[in-house]
View 1 (tube, rainbow, N blue to C red):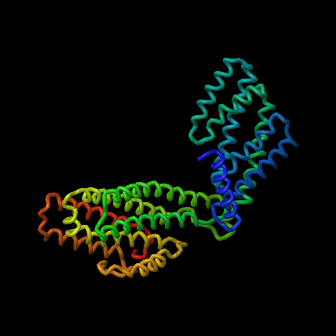
View 2 (view 1 turned 30 degrees about the vertical axis):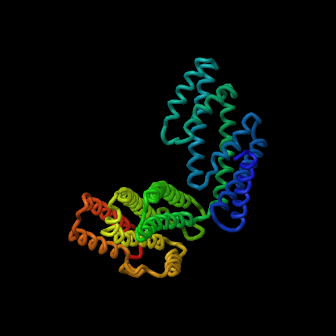
View 3 (view 1 turned 135 degrees about the vertical axis):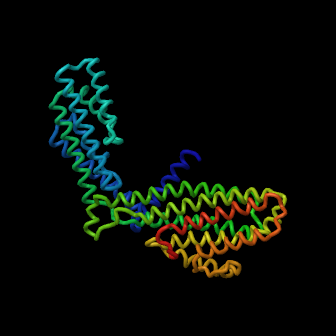
Length: 401
């Protein structure tokens, strides 16, 4: 992609985001509001600092505002006080060395060593490097003078005050909509993977190319689960210290059910990855048709139960947009529920799956397994499927709990 094409694509993406922000609530609107209030607060901070302080420290006010305004109130307060502490330490060090030992090369060396040592304090977090940076700036540009340090600190306080005022007055909305949607999305992907594998088994597949594509999808689900968990944690953080929480009846500080759902879906995806690996091994065997007839085609029903359990887990999320109803319409369009499943689509998929797994194990024990290595493959697939069902059954909030 050439540079002109890249600019055009980015412009189109930006235009779409602005359109979505104007259209209705969502992360696009929150992001746009964050940018606008950051600009407004920085301009106000610069104006106040220009009016009250000398030009040599004016820039620190809007710079502090940019650091203070974060996506959530909690994060903004946290970063603001850390930056203030780091700047204060740097100013005190520069003034102490500048007014006692004077401005020399060796003084600067000792100053930086002390500042770097103090910057290792864990409570300062990402702002810890501001200790030596501020100390160097105050020692060099401010000649290590107390008056300069006081003005610099005042500029930081102005910038921090403007930033936190903007964050508190225009606090982001208190909701867990993005967290809800992300959990539902993860549940649908896990369920779609299981039902997709089951469909291929019933059609006589899969081939090795298909199983490896599923393997990639299962790997991607692990990364998606981490992203979903981060979204849930961001939703929790958005409520902390948010004044709008008091205005509209509050909001949950913790979403333990969401964490439990993500954990269950992540573990189920891991078991599905192991199942796909076993199917990949089976697809490469010369006796694959015999394996399919003995076990793999009936095993598809068990995968369908896992898929239904994952989908119903998504339905149990507050605010879910009735994914089950949509899937029922899709099933009806394809000819209705599978006759071999042994249960209606709105039944208990975990109980159905456990009963089916027991029947498959019993039938496999009674069968004449003449193909070498057949039972270890059966056993591994059954074990992985049972574990996936158990993981989903332990998740909070599904219809069967």
